[in-house]
Each structure stands twice: as structure tokens, then as C-alpha cells.
Image 1 (cartoon, rainbow, N blue to C red):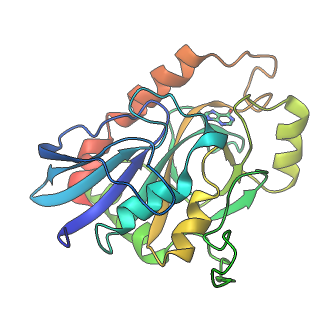
Image 2 (image 1 turned 90 degrees about the vertical axis):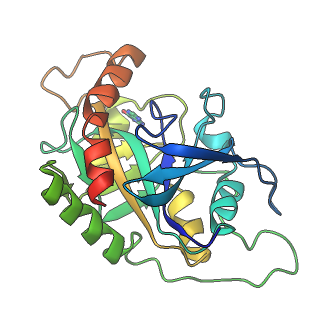
Length: 247
Ligand code: HPA
């Protein structure tokens, strides 16, 4: 399994990887339990690529119930492949309207009550990993140059706010996130990024903006619907196969 070149974790609306061929399916157990669903390992642009649907392939696992540790441990067991996390998000900053793709470079964690470390069990060594730059510079750079090669527009940078969900935010909460300097809001960015760092994995986020976050768009009273979210994710995802081929 050492030959996996890249692992991709799909978020809301992204339950399989278009263009993945010769697929082999693994259903691993890990010391932390079972991942959200099977790992699909296939060939993309001549490389072996692993794919995992973060919420399960039928979107049955809500953000706060995802076994982030099992998901990452299952990928880590395949070798040292870098992990590209696809995260469906709401846009807060003006540059982050619906259907925009973005590669954030910072995050703030507003989640609570999730198992957020591998150091949970008594007797495990306590790690205080450096997390000043939560995403791996090398993988971010590769993603941005792949986008350039594929002619796909990606906003370089931005701060991702990880909220608890599964409900969407109030307008006051989004106004607070904006004051905090956040550009994007999603429910699954943490503890995933922190656990990847504890596991020593290269990890970056490709955020797919599905909607304006509450009150952030041109019509502040707009209601966010699942139909809108899924339609925008589907439209923005059309760029992904070309991008991944270059990556
Ligand atoms: N908020 C949080 N998570 C999200 C959103 C949002 O507006 N849209 C998609 N995921």
C-alpha cells in the first residue's frame, strides 16, 4: 500500500471521486474504531489515489459524530500520502462567494466536545504539536500550482472557522466570525487538521463555497437551503477532476 500518491477526504456533496478507475475497496478497523465508510483506492492520472467520504457515502454521519481519528488513522495506515481535505463551506469574506474554490492558510476552532487528540487515552504520550501554520505549505503550493496548470481559479489563503453544527450559524455568530478575521465557515475542518498534524501527515484544505454564510451575502435575509448548497457544490466540483489530474 506504500504506493498511494494522494489521499482525498470528501465532504458534503462529495461522496465519490469522479475519474477514479480500477477501484479496490478497503474496510479497515483502526485502534480508534471504524472510519466513516470504505476507503476507495483507485487510479487517477496514472497514480494510486485513496478516497474517503467524511460523512459516509450516504451522508449519514453528522459533523460532531465523525470519527476523525479513525478516518485519519485508516489513511495513515496506507503510508505517508499527503491528505487533501475537501470541505464544503459558507463564505463570509467578499472574495468567497458561492462556487468559489479556496485554499485557506489559517483556521480558528470553535468546535467543542469532539475527541480532538490522539492523546486521549490514559498512558498515551502527550503531544503538543506545533500548529502555527495548520496546513502544510508544500501541499498547499502543489495544489495552487496544479490549479494554475489546470486553469482552475482558487483563492489562495483565508481563515477557516470550524463550527460545531449540524445547524447553520446565526447572523450574529457569522458577524462575530467576521470580526475574528474568518473568511470561510464549515463544520468539519477541526479536529481533522489537528489530528493530521499529530499523526505527522501532510494535510491541506480545498474549501468549496456552497453558500453565503448567514447574513454575509448581498441579501442578508436569505435562507440557506440544502438544494442551494448541493447545487453549488456540484457546479464547483466540475473543476475537480482536471485539478486532481494536475495535482
Ligand atoms: N456554515 C457552516 N458550514 C457550512 C455552511 C455554512 O454556512 N455551508 C456549508 N457548510
